[in-house]
Amino acid sequence: MRTPLIAGNWKMNTTTTEARVLASDLRGPLDSIEGVETVVCPPFVSLATVADALRRSSVKVGAQNMHYEAKGAFTGEIAPAMLADLCEYVILGHSERRHIFLEDDALVNKKVAAALSAGLKPILAVGERLEERNAGDTEQVITRQVRAGLAGIAADEALIIAYEPVWAIGTGIAASPEAAGETIGLVRRLVAELYGDEFAQALRILYGGSVTPDNIAELRAQREVDGGLVGGASLKATDFVSIVRQSAPAAG
Ligand code: 13P
Image (cartoon, rainbow, N blue to C red; front, top):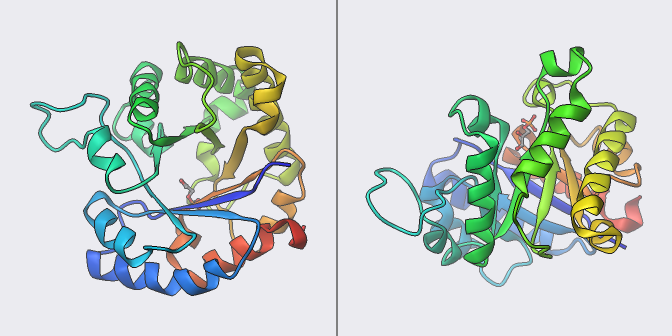
């Protein structure tokens, strides 16, 4: 059975002081929940602070992005090895990176490769936009993003994938549990084509997009949904803890 994973993407929120408080508020309650892996992804500047606040806690730390080069003249960028010193996970290909900062599949692919070589666990995010969904292109878009994102990458147990339909992010309109389950099933079949059934069955695939304490239980009730990548609701300790608690195997 796959261990569920709930990751909080704090996006461009929290000062370092606020990040320390949020991490400290999460620590006790999350440590008392068994059977769910939890990750928080604060802004780069708070990674060290949050890692410190969560030292010897079960809650893991992740970054929200990174550059693929090891070092050099890339003003404003952060290299894989810099993150590997501070955290375990890194979100790559988030839709906000793809659509606001124009990251394409080829760039995301380089980042996935670089993260794995640096010993980081990449959370590769994929998802279709509203117009693509309305045009009936969801399957085609997800297929392209998964195949291109993983092109040339060897099977690696550190990999995690998150399906985040762009139209569900920050809108309060989550995908229906059935639709989330169906598309995640597609992602798993695509991964099976690349790496075989055994790998695909062990891979955690998360759903993201307006996950809340009110909808996590029905999302998790879908066999394919192994957890959540949570934005807005991860900024409120009580909401995030509730989402994690409801994701524990015993709760399902
Ligand atoms: P919301 O949970 O705010 O919709 O954000 C989802 C997301 O983008 C997580 O990466």
